[in-house]
Length: 348
Image 1 (cartoon, one colour):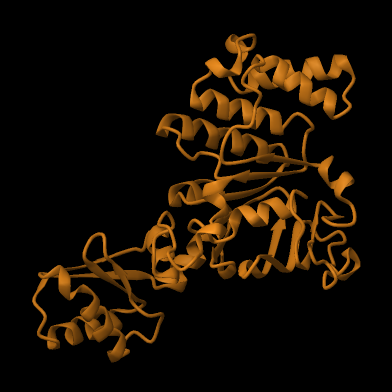
Image 2 (cartoon, one colour):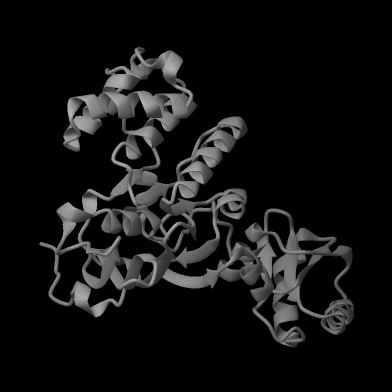
């Protein structure tokens, strides 16, 4: 049985008229001995896209499930569009939409009937449900396939139909849980275009993703989650600045010297910033530097270690490198420290 005795009420969250669409304070969720969410705080302003970044098992899908009333938290508090996720779930469900990692449409039904059925389930009159289905099929470029069973749709078409289904009720807040997983680049760009369209219509979007490019393209704010905790938040430029205005990429001639080199740089403490990160895939050490003086100090210190180097280059950090510097691993990499039964994103 889910424990909710330590959950505060909606009155404890000051949402008021501040323009906050989603407010989360100290959210906790446990699966047995595993803590999937460990005191998560989050605010999403109305009419914006908040990107939630994290590897498999970070807690992203658990967060979405709680905010969409599909899962009860064990602690903390949350409101969506002013409604408490525990005390007002029915009202909340009327104003949100949800698209999971995999399309959840009924593949035996034609696309039009999928949308019409959802409209009726949302208590739309028959005429309005028909009109809304027609409108969204046209908007998502599915009119020609409207009468075909969804089973005959391509993966991209099913994803667009799923997005259309989430928009039937004209939601104020839309949850997109890794919406472009498995899509080809062209279809991914189409989905991005639709997300921008939704935001232009005033919809607030909470987007979970492992794609750095997706976050940069769509999100005005970012929250980085790792092992159930928020480890960083801010805009793309803010997070890049946090790990250094530039990244020094140091690649030893012997890939086996990569980790010893990173440890040696850390011991020197010449940057005064976050610890270095190891890009094992490319056999390089990433060092954040803010000034030319720090860059010179790092290069001099590295040379003094007597490790033969293949190359030293400087570059502006990408969002992927920001995530690597913050967490020590790439966003798409499974986290071996997280028990398999907590990797909810892969099991959804």
